[in-house]
Image (cartoon, rainbow, N blue to C red; front, side, top):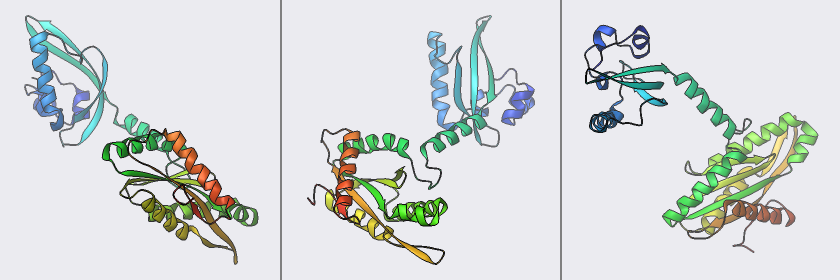
Amino acid sequence: MVTAWNQEAENIFGWSALEAMGRPLEELIVPASMAEMHRAGLSRYRASGATPMLDQRLEIPARRKDGSTLTVEVRIKALDIDGQAVFSAFLHDITERKEAEIRREHEVRQDALTGLLNRRALTEVLPRAMARADRSGKYLGLLFLDLDGFKAVNDRFGHEAGDQVLCRVAAAIKNCIRETDCAVRFAGDEFAVVLEGLMSGYPDALRVAEKILDAISGPQHFHGQSVELGASIGVVVHASGEERLPAALLREADHWMYRAKHAGKGCVLSPYLK
């Protein structure tokens, strides 16, 4: 039960001291999703006199009077006054700080030009996707592609035109895959695509690769002139139970991309087609 409620608590949570005094804390600031956990924690403290929530800085969700949520940093102390357990909680709103951290993490994992995930993000996404494939028994496809003709765009029309092409290619790739798949700008004019939940392995992955190749290939027009653009794509598939590290899968996809480039460019190659 609340026995003291200062001005800062009024400002943060929207409850006046008159409204808060004498009411259970659970009714005021504990989110509904955490109510049972809150009650269980109090019960354990009454029974044992110990709880991991005390005397440390914690970041926890809370609820305002209007039902909106926030994140607070809190330090809780317990006192025994005449046999009565009394808690004092010093806290402040860190919602803006947490949101800024999320934005920074998103920016670190995102390619600033195209909006796709970047190389760093792929090192996180690929192992998780392979683990899901192992659990589900379905196939995972990895496409690695390098643009053909991109250097000519930069050389003839400048890097601004090159940036436009990269953004167009990124949009084309996203339009060719499902929301459950993942498109990555790996580096420069290299892209990777992670395809999850494939039922037939290579046939499914190759079908998507050909779709992407068709979407990318064709003339790029700038100032009344055009440059032919295409792509060389390497495709590999991971099957459930295969003992292969993510880095090895990526190297293999990169290998088949170079095989495609040396085979004359503008094509898709994989172990399935060799």
